[in-house]
Length: 161
Image (cartoon, rainbow, N blue to C red):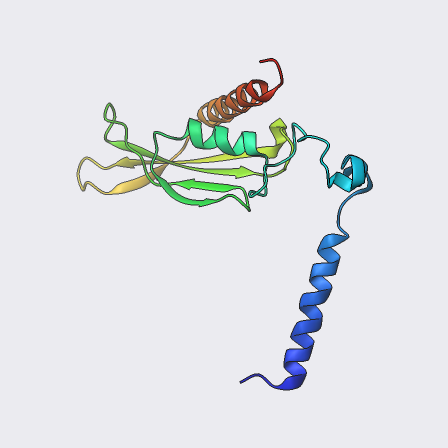
């Protein structure tokens, strides 16, 4: 059982963190809230994250769409991390790939996305997987595919499209 002073300290720390998180909005974010501070709404901002996830919704959805052929190992929509499991193409079963996508911002920007690729090849003698280098062009192609898909999703959400 926790002692009374420890419970008091934990309560104060929790209350302080809640108050601090409420005050962390920037002045431009407060200005963009619309009538009555966003109570009645000013409409969703195109680059704002969807309610429920902590990163840009277009980049998140585009990343999942682009990597949909690979099995997912871990996803964290609040931290913006997608980790796939190893995937071996039926055309090249002697090599496999794993991807980690980091969404670094709530805005739809190219620098808000980072893709890490890992490659392994199977030894013909032992059958064990060993790490191999990944062509940077492949990583860039995946990033570009995600960004292109995110732009398509963003355009489809615009009025009149």
